Length: 414
Image (cartoon, rainbow, N blue to C red; front, side):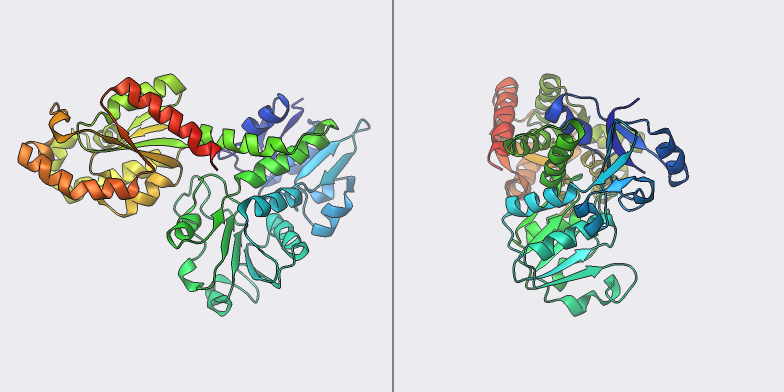
């Protein structure tokens, strides 16, 4: 019997096993179950306790023997515990999780008009929290009903938006449920999605300077309370901050940008070896797709066609989590690549003097000193605009050590 786990339909995106290992050192299984198999799943009762995620937070209720008053009031269950007699008891720990998320984000809700995107179980919990936090008005936006995405402009005065839908969640990175340009008075955006770390919605908010947060803190906070119910124990609240920082650091991509020949591949392989992370070279992905070297493809198809392949390779690599990704020197030249690189990554710019750049390999765009200097003139400000940190790469081992140090400090400061 799997004692603990997560029930859902598609769970490849989940960080929950890592979180529960940190909370109590116990095994925690991902239980992917189709709708047609739910009756058999609950008939077997092959678990001690589970969490429940999209799309089953309301669906599971008829199979439960009791529901806590809070979960019944909200109309959503995300935690189920089986007692010694085999009875199933439903709880809602998402309420606690979302309350902690709002507190941590520092986004004021009181007296403000809030839009909640989605009408499922997560939405019901969010609405209950917003009401208890003193929101002046709460409007649920769904695909059907009086308030939909088609007439969203009538709520252009919204001040806080909460995304409680799966739109933009891995593997459908890059999608957003709406355009924030409609809302000139926004004071905060909260997205319950945590993979990717920056959804398209949150990247819009960041670009507009709007305070925002993803759902990782909520996920850890609700898991903390769920683990207390699982094992009838008490866990200190400080564990929420510790585990959130740990998981964020473990799942963030290390993205390397910089001029051709600056050492991205060498440093990237060192980092991957030291950290146990997968290493991805986007030039290699391009060559697999093209069936020839990057140099040959550039000469035969031109730079525009090459950049199109590069963007697709970046999308493929950067939607994953916990990787070391070495990009091509020109990855910064397309504006749309900025969001792709940053959705799950901390971006490190490897710097070397032009005279020290490696000339090895087939690099048509930087084949002569004149071409190399012209590239640097164009790209230097793009690297500076896209990076989180700049690293002087005089020695690959020292550069890798500095990236590891900065990555740890990056999450300690969050």
